[in-house]
Image 1 (cartoon, rainbow, N blue to C red):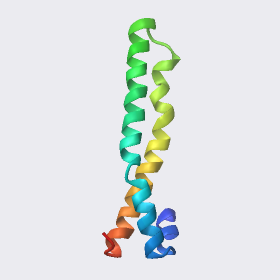
Image 2 (cartoon, one colour):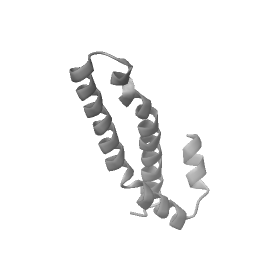
Image 3 (tube, rainbow, N blue to C red):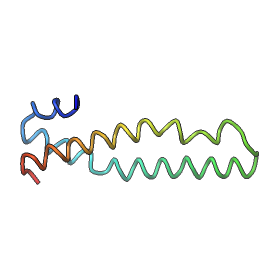
Length: 83
């Protein structure tokens, strides 16, 4: 809940701005993750098992952090009845 405390101190305008900024990140994360999985599948088909098949796992922490941040911002927006 550390991130939630950060947004509680922000004004309504700042929270709405952060909410608008985070809207497209879910699509971007999905596209990047899908690309990395496709790259791993092609590499696996052409070269067999190698270290590159674990490439999507390197982006997973970033996507999870973004998802957590989006969820916290949505909760704060709902609590304040901003959108």
